[in-house]
Length: 156
Image (tube, rainbow, N blue to C red; front, top):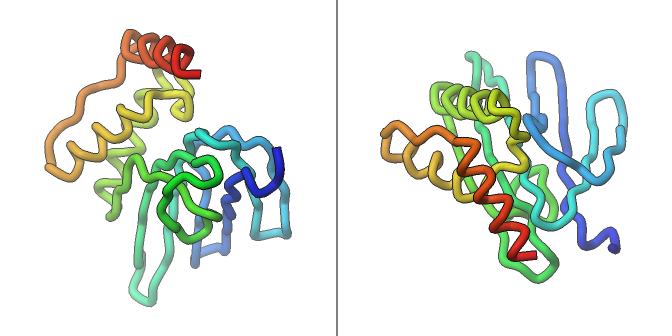
């Protein structure tokens, strides 16, 4: 697999100014660029969560959490800051209250013993849609995860 078939994600940390980090991920390779920056490379169809917080002059300027799926070369994707060349968005939460709800959902998936990057992409889209409608979302279940694993096996 060539370097061009990977998606790169840049994590950045500057104390009290900016924090862009991977909340969950399974990168193929990671490289520390310097004290404040780290680069992660992902194979196509990898799922990861990018948490972004930035401070403004009066406190938090933005807080976002985006769960994305990397795409193969030639597939359509959205351009995102810190993600090259881009990725498919499964879930986007903006504002600390929504981000916190998604983080609680990620914690609940992990409590099942499931790595969130292995959870069904459809589930993250479901959470996104319910979040946008300000409605509660369904909990991820072990049965749902088993069904997703079987489906993924059949598709590959």
